[in-house]
Length: 81
Length: 189
Image (cartoon, rainbow over all chains, first blue to last red; front, side, top):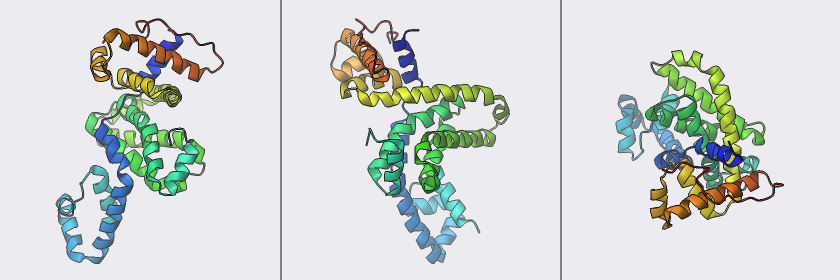
């Protein structure tokens, strides 16, 4: 194998992930700020908290937050008694 | 931000700089994707969950990283842990015990690949783009030719020239040698 072929193989070993995954990861700081704001409201607003416990995904969608697996897991951890 | 060290990126992220966070993602997205998809062979939905979970943990715990320069091994370990968790959640838990030896070998290969990947920053934008399209996005000569408005034969020779330049970046003391065509380094797609 020539050095160029070795380099080519190395480049091929790291394929590009789907663009949407990368964009979602880049948007994480903004999403986290949005979540922190939502968590503050959840602490103050009992009705909102009940909606979150009853159907977390529906509550997130109603509040304009995409219920990705990471968002759901993060909120469940924070809402756990 | 492209040429920033890992320690500089970590410092920027801690300071709340969005550009630093995006540069960190650009630097390590392919690495994390390869660990989940190629090393642990997770199907796309599980690989996506791992991909997002890894960067969520990195974001949350950047403040606890003791040595800012050790970002790469920290990301690798986090990606391993998340991938193993995903395997355990799936019906393929038995793979967790079968994988360790192969995993270490594949991760070492990915570390080498990441070094080559970083060297791409030393190339012109044209070279970066054509190598990215051919090797990382698996685009055919035909697709690249159409996208970049180049004759197919030029695509092959440009890939070869850019690979030779990349070798020069990786081996700065070496005398530059540019191969005449791309046929030796990449199969025609």
